Structure formats: structure tokens, C-alpha cells
Image 1 (tube, helix red, strand yellow):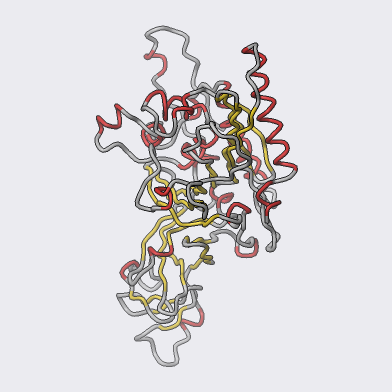
Image 2 (cartoon, helix red, strand yellow):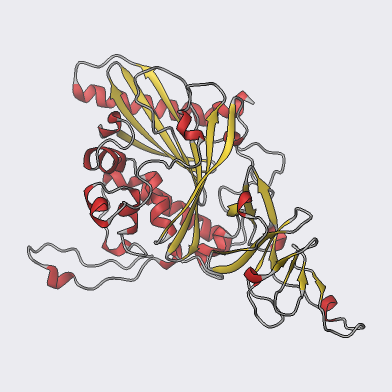
Length: 430
């Protein structure tokens, strides 16, 4: 848990507030043997796009571990420890082989599963390669992303299939991959902070999405079987717009369409994006996307199917001054320090989702320590896992009394969320 800094109640009192507490290591540290890192390792984690793997190896760092990713000439992908077990040369300089990757220094050959296939220069009767293996992790490729399972081998779960990945009428395509120089948790928490869409993305920096995001919504936060959603409900004329963005534990965000304006009635929309927030180490993070593109013209904007086009507000400004004048998610999240200090925060009513997410993570950590599966982990290889991210627009006439209308917004949003939890629309459509 975070150490709490003293509450400052004195004007010009900076002198009494100079000490910076330590970060909340339980949640923010991700290396081997850390509490948060062991939770992360119970789930399949993205390491790169499939089309990143060409004729050269790819060096990556995931969860504080230096790795090399490659595709051998037979088409098999591998994720291995970066350094050759012979003399420590980095396999990022290795040679792609028909059966694996060969170290450039002395030619040792490694299969994608870590089997040492050849040790050139050793005597013909040497058993060295038969007595050793190189560190390797299981790999799964799905729709253009390479995933690795980095946890205990005997606890490896099947690769999860969410209903949003297989919904009729939509194509799932790889999106963008980009990097933030800060801890993963403060990026992940952003998905459960709907108030920021009104201020950061609309009022402060101009309309980065649609103008209707500038209305501060009525907020609810609801646990789901695999994580949580926020329910942000806004009045748009005679319509009520219920926006539900989802956290799938531990580090998958599903984001509802940012081009929504609430003007036209429609049922459950599903997500526009599924994005993993992957810790590189404690102070660097990779964001890697799937995009959901409708096969019906006009349902999703044409630009969303173009991987070269970035979602607004996600990357650093073109200059420091540009970032100051029109900050986006990058500036807001990275500037919280390399690791945000929870002991200096003063959380309010709009931060209920942040607190709920941190508590869900702590529960997952406790489960792993107790030898149990954490919430969000599915052991059924045949399951299609229900998800809940969507926009829904319903026609509900404006109430005469503003307070009654606010209550109507809250009740409508919660009623829709509860109905979706009972009968998930995407799963039902399959």
C-alpha cells in the first residue's frame, strides 16, 4: 500500500510538503517475483505485431525481462531469453534458421521452444545440448498480434477469445503500437476515469473526439465477471447516451467509439478498440491495439481502418509548446512522474473507478499468492467470453426538473448496464 503524505492545509506551505513518498510497489512493480508482475504473468501478454517478424530478430522487453522474438523459416514464432546461454551474446544479432535462431558468435542453434539443436565446435559425442535448454516462453498468434505466456508452465491458461473479437459483421485488425515513458498502471487507470474525456479531450484541448464529450456525465462504476466498466450517461437533446468503457483484467482496455455524438438512437454498439497496456518495465509501457471495423459502410469511419492514422490525443505533441497548448493522454499520464505517487493523491468522487480498479488488482494479487486463479482468467478453452463495452442511445424525453433528469440519467445508465450483464448482447448474437 502507498505511504500517505501529510495533508497540506497551509497557504504557501510548500516547505511542509517536500518529501515524496515511495510508489505503491505492490501494484506498479512488474519484474520477476514482484506481486504485480506475478499477477501479470498469469495472463497471455502481447509482445509485438506479427508483421514485426521478418528476416531479422526483434529485441523486446516485457515485464522487465529482455527477450528476443523471431519467426524461423518454417513459419514458427519464438520468444526466447535475449542472451545466448553459451557466452551471453545477444540473440538480436542471431541468424534466422529453418528450425530456429542461431547465435552469431559460435553458432548455437535454438528452437522456438528453447531446445538447443546444435552446438558447433563441441566434440561429436558431446551431450551438452541434450542436457540443457534455453529460456523460452509459449507463443500464440491471433489476428496479427504475437502473444507470450510468461507464467508458471503448469498454470498456462488457454488463449482467451472474447465475444468482441468474433462478432458478426466486424473485422478485427491490428491497429497501432506506441510507447509511453511511464508506469503501466497510470495509463491503465485512464480507462476508468471518464471525467477526463470532458476536460482533457474537449474543454482544455478543443474537441479531440466530438463536442458532446464536453458534457460532464453522470457516472456509475460496475464490476463485471472479467473486470469492470464505467457507465457515463449524458443528455443529448431528447436522447440519453450511455457510454460504457471496459477494463478486462489485468491490462486490456475496450473503448467505445469516440466518434459517437448521441444524436441517433441505436442499441449496444460494442467497442471500436481493444488495447493492451503492456509493461515493458516499471517506467516504460507499450500500448498495442486491435481495431474493430464494421463491414457495413459508414458504421465506422473509413480512417479507423487505416493503421497509419492515429487515434487523436494519444501521442506526444509535436513540440513541448504544442503539448502545453493542447495536451492529450500522453502529457496527462506521463507527467504524473515515471511512477505515479499514490500517497500524494487526493481522490474524489470522479475517481471511484480508479479506486475500484486498484482494489480489483489487489484482489488478483492476493488470489495468486493464495495459489488461486485471479479474476479475469478463463480455463475453458471452448469459451467465448462475454464483454460489455458499448455506446447505447435511447430516446427518453427531458424531465422538467434538472435534478429529476440527473436521476433519470443515472437510472437509465445503470438499468442498461445491468441488462447487459444478465444478457451480453455480443455473446447472444453469436
